[in-house]
Image 1: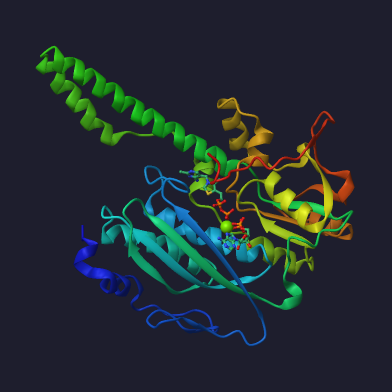
Image 2: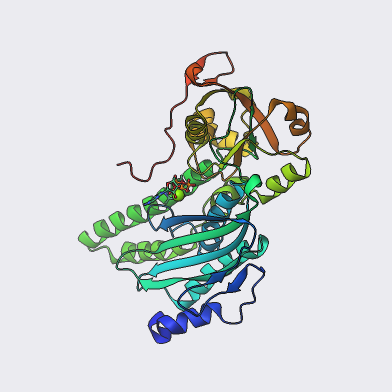
Length: 370
Ligand SMILES: Nc1ncnc2c1ncn2[C@@H]1O[C@H](COP(=O)(O)OP(=O)(O)O)[C@@H](O)[C@H]1O
Ligand SMILES: Cc1ncc(C[n+]2csc(CCOP(=O)(O)OP(=O)(O)O)c2C)c(N)n1
Ligand SMILES: [Mg+2]
């Protein structure tokens, strides 16, 4: 394992970026000067940025560096698609604590590159520095769209249909599952340590040796994820839905409002309604949920609809279309109509399977909450 201090800042940057070939014409100049240079002669430029902090957004006990790189890039690329744009460039800033080795950052870049290659994005710069605590990541993604193509959150109109791609709640269930296995792992270690303290106090060296071996064996701890692969994939390897954007374009559908689902459907619906000055009615029975998500919610004794409405990190697209597009949407695979837009004074409601109406609340994930 190679110490980062051996390479130094510029050595590391060079190591990570050498031999890079750009993919986009709009990338004029990438890594190596005071600024990257981009050229967009006749398009609007889209820009989005997100930070990911160790312990707040990710936990390195259950996400590896390749997946972390992939996910960090995908969640930014997702924001460009959410404007109906095409992602083109990315700047990547990282603050590293001492425990990271060059190989760790290589893995992170491997994941980053996989995500960028998938959607034709050039990494054109960034910043590399040290951190006294955990790993901090900040990514900015730049994209383009023709002025008339851009879809904002504020364009939804009364009678528009509300649509969502893929399925919801899976990433959240994946996170619950990872958290549970982490708790099981640390619970077992705690248990062995307690017994070791007892054996020590009793001078029972034979038992102490056996317990020491148990502790060693914990390195081979195998979490129980059989049959739950989809949930882990949703949490650890989210995909930006550029395929849905392409499908909509092909079908000649231009959404009136759109955003991606990062904090949870409920919270995102409220953003669209508030910014569009309208209300909505969303039907519980129409919310797309995968089988594994349903099974896991049952196992954890959690309300399935709550998980789907407030779970977050689905990175699916939530959008509204004119009611005239109903039939076109119906033939689109992987897109569901979940409700419709109403007048603002009618409020924002979820209608349950048994016909009860609940006012929507944004109780999704909030990093600033205690
Ligand atoms: N510190 C900040 N300074 C200025 N604008 C910010 C800041 N943080 C967030 N924003 C802006 O607030 C809006 C909402 O942010 P956010 O909820 O993070 O969006 P998203 O879910 O797409 O990442 C965005 O336009 C974002 O650029
Ligand atoms: C250790 C850990 N804690 C919490 C989460 C859950 N989580 C991380 S990011 C996120 C949603 C989006 O994060 P935010 O910072 O709000 O991004 P933005 O809305 O700005 O895109 C959620 C639900 C997680 N995946 N891992
Ligand atoms: Mg953000």
